[in-house]
Image (tube, helix red, strand yellow):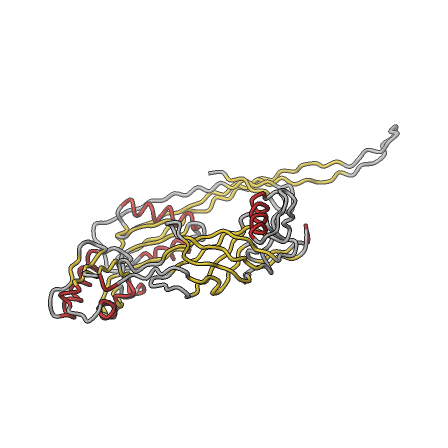
Length: 390
């Protein structure tokens, strides 16, 4: 596909056309994964691959004002900031006429936090504060007391305190320098929990474990490992994600003790065969026993470059002229055509995807070419793994 590029230092225009020819042959026999990938079996604890159903975080969000800014707050055009400031001052007993509040040192913000499981009143949370309006920076600001609400609309925490910034801005106009984001800050331990959200584990008759990566084999293996630990059938895998454990059959003294004992169990899991590709960064991650059929790849490219440059023709006074001729720009066009010979590579029995990717880079393929080639091999059935492109 033609792509038009503009040279940053001149008026040159370049068109580059890339064409690639791929010939892929897949044979009938698979082969073992190369030892470079390593053993895909690994020992893990149950707590590392599962969550307990009902034991989870809850998201909180709030709206408030950050004050004390050095003229970097919202402008007069941000109407909701002026309205919020007027309402806050009215609650303090100060009546501010509509439209007269100046908000250069104030910014409207959203506050977000994560409420952990078994949170008790009086415990503290870290909060993140982000600008809502057109404030240039929140540096040096202090968040006024703001309520944090859950999905049900109830208030679960109150946040307040000075912001800690991970970025800054300095200067004005063309001399302005900005590092990271100056419109997002954090307040460590900036919120206090006001509502009890702890889950009552005493009422649990069944402890359900949820696999983070669903897999029937792993779910069945967890149930078998738990049953061997308790020397009787107390656990059952319901599907590829959920394993139920009977509290009564386990004869545990308490539910927390049962969960702690189960989560500490070790088992061997198989990493799924999967290839994750980030096309934007060219990152390719291989996981598990990714297997290939022997494959051949032919790759060639044609590059056409058109460059237009300008030469200055000096002016001057010609005989009979009353005024001198001004200098003119004369365009000069150069055409370069480069057709590289087709590059080929062959993967024989015993190769793997890692060697395929290394070979593709060796013959000069780009990240986009690698993605196209892997997709073609996957469509042919040559890659025995899931291919995920981000």
